[in-house]
Length: 217
Image 1: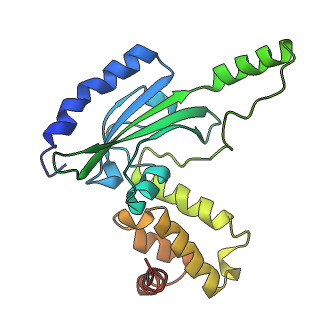
Image 2: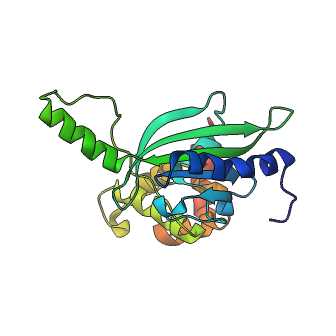
């Protein structure tokens, strides 16, 4: 990256391998520098879990959190699912500088797929009714490149409309742009042009949609 890494983030890099080594191969640990969402990963251990590496972009969840600006308390023990079906128990810790300004995320993703299978077997053998400890599955968009990441978020949002782009109304396109904005998509360089191409409108139209939806932001 162009700018020098913040000393606090530099000091946390050794913790990434330390945490992963403590909890084993099923524990992915990632350190993000939020200055560059399109290649925010500056340290990672057990990246095989989500297929990411140093230089990979922030996830949809990370972008949404960054866009919301809500960093008062860490997000701990929430459930996510990778595109290949792994169930993850995840935590996101917000890293701030000495002035309280957010500078990074420390994220832990523990693959609980095998543990979930084992739990179900134990529950069945002991005749215990399924518990409701875990929240509803949430599909997450991961990507080893920013283009893959951006494409995944946009495609998933379009799928929620349930019709081809050619049949999407102007109001629906405005709503799609608003949803993508809330997910933090437009923090990514080049996202305006990509979304404009997908929606078959001009980049200036996308800017107008954003202005329209951000009136009360």
